[in-house]
Amino acid sequence: MKISFGARGRIQGLRFSLGLLAAAGVHLPHPAAATEAGWRQYTVPASAWNPEAIAVALYYPTQAPAPTMAMGPFAVRVAVMAPADANAKGLVVLSHGTGGSELGHSSLAEALARRGYVVAALRHPGDNWQDRSLWAKPPGAYFIERPRQVSRVIDALLSDPEWKDRIAMDVRGPRIGALGHSAGGYTVIALAGGQPDLSRIVSHCERERADDPIFCGMGRTGQAQQVLPEIPALTDKRVRAVVAMAPLGVVFTAPSLASIGIPTAIYAAERDRWLVPRFHAEWIAQNVPGAEFHSVHNAWHFAFMDRPGTPVPTPDGDAAADPPGFDRAALLAHLAVEIPTFFDKALVVEK
Figure (cartoon, rainbow, N blue to C red):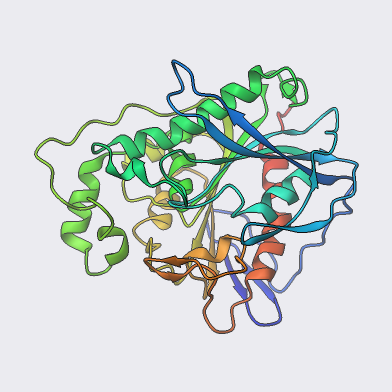
C-alpha cells in the first residue's frame, strides 16, 4: 500500500500485493472514543534475571477526562494517574528507536488506549536519549538485549496483580501485540521469530555502504569482526501480532522471516535515508508470509514519530523535520485508526 500525505492531509491508497486492495482517496473514519487514555509511570525493577530497571510509560483505557499537556518535547493527551478501566482488549508493547524515548510515539499509544488496549511504552535501558551504553557493549549485545527487555516488561505486567487481570485472555493466552519504530521495528520482528545474523550486516555494508551510508556508518556497523557471536533465538511466543515502522531489517535471515506465522504489518518511509527501505523494510515484507506492506510516499525516517516541539539532532538531521509538502499530522491521524484496527483483527481468535 502506498500512502501519500500532502499539505492537505489527503490520503491516497493502493494496497501492495501482500495486502488487501483498498480504494484510493478514501479517508478512514475515526471511531467514537468510548474512553480516554490514562497514563502513569511504571518501573520493572532490577533483579537477578533483570539486570537493569526498565522505565515504562503505561497508557490504558480510562473514563477520566484527558487534557493536552507537555511532557518533555512532546505534547500528549492523557489523564495522569487516572483510574484504569477494569478490562482491556489486550496488551501492546511499544519499542522506540535507537536513542529514543518512551514518549516519542504517544499519539499512537493514546489511540490504542482509547480503543481499549493497555500500552507499555518502554525506555530501552542503554539505548535511549539519556543513555547510549548498550552501543559500547560487545558485538551482539545490542541485538540481544532490546527484545529481551520487551519480554521482561511483558513478564512484569502479566505477574502484576494490578494489571494482569485487566488484560484480555482467550484459549491461546493473553492477547499481546508489539509495535516498534526503527530499532524498535527490529525488536518486534525479533520477538515474532526473525533471527539476526551479524554477518549479514558486515556483508551488506561491504557491498552497499554507498547506498545505505547512515546505517553502515553507525558504531561498529559493517566493521568486520574476527569472531561474530551467534545470536540466540529471541522469539516471544506470547506476542501474537506485530507492527514494524521503518524497521532495521537487513540483519534478519530470510529463512527465519519466512517462518514467522503471526500477523505482521510493515511500514516504510519512501524517502528514508537512515534505513533505506529496499534493504530493510522491504526485505522483511518480501520474506514474511502474508505480511501487510505500506509505503508512505515522500516520508522521511521520523515520519512515524510524534513531532517534538524542539529540534532533535540525529545522524539524519532534525527528527522534527519533514520533506516539503509532507503532512506528518495527517499520517499519524491515519495510523491512529489503522494500527488499532490491525490489532483488533489480529488478536481475535476465530471460534
